[in-house]
Length: 184
Image 1 (tube, rainbow, N blue to C red):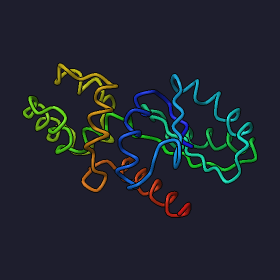
Image 2 (spheres, helix red, strand yellow):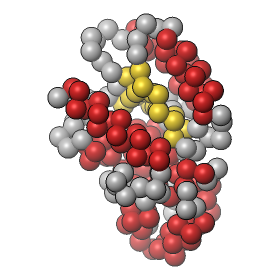
Image 3 (spheres, rainbow, N blue to C red):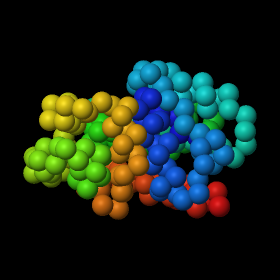
Image 4 (tube, rainbow, N blue to C red):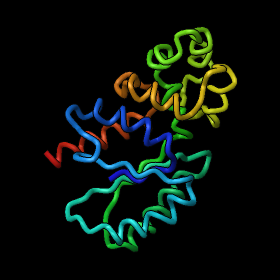
């Protein structure tokens, strides 16, 4: 079960997870539970973990880091989880989900074929996309048709973790593959 910060993460992962783990089906192999922001997710984590009754369920908490101190954010989430008597994996996206889009130039060009020059500028301006503080603002400024939900759908179908320049994207993909391997 993936507990997510926002609906656009759900849209992205609906398309992306079956590409990372071929054959995975939403509702059978994984469940995506979006929230309405960080506060909603943080309040929900202990409640959902305590209330979930299906044995063997593995939980992954996914949220944007948004410029916060990632060590203290992860520590706080792990403390919330510890109080439930369950275990869960916490994965923070540096800094926003849209940073993963900046990290795969090929996918971004495919999603926005009329904005190739903007995509090339992104690659030059953000050699380390995880360091970009507000990738959603950068994308919205240079790609007039950019919209979070639509981008999530377009990029979930195209993004390749192996080609990504984002360390947090590659770590997330490795985490998912290893969870799937344990379940197999």
